[in-house]
Image: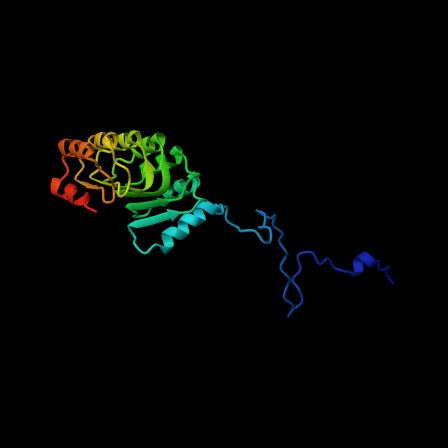
Length: 223
């Protein structure tokens, strides 16, 4: 009887078909990760969260009743708030600022990039540097300073506004020096001096130096 060895008793399975009725398993492919998953609790985007000033201005813009007007008030108002507004003024044309002692002239100068036509300033001592910064707002047509302190020197700086047509100094002291400053407003049409004490010398300067409508000016002096 011939000798049978183990190698001769079995056939190689390499390249052979699987038994009938058996589906061959697919090889498992492994791929290297192409990125890192976001850490749990963090946003996947790289957007930066809004600052408190940006949030405050955004809320004021969203809740305003008049699309063309905005009011920013509070002792916490700073240059950052005006920067946030200047970066996204939307369709605001009339701005009211109240109690903003921490705003510097540099902060006010940022308003020059906004096409404002009306500005109301309340509860502030308006310095010459403030006025020089605001004088860069070349689209301003109306300026209400009835509830703030302004010197003749500051008014003279504001008089350089090329489109300024209306000034409200309601109940503010107006003397000859202030009248001389107002005479520098070359486009002035309306001057509101209700409640202001104006003596004859001051009135003479106003009436001889302004191109404002005289009946309207005289009417505004009546209290």
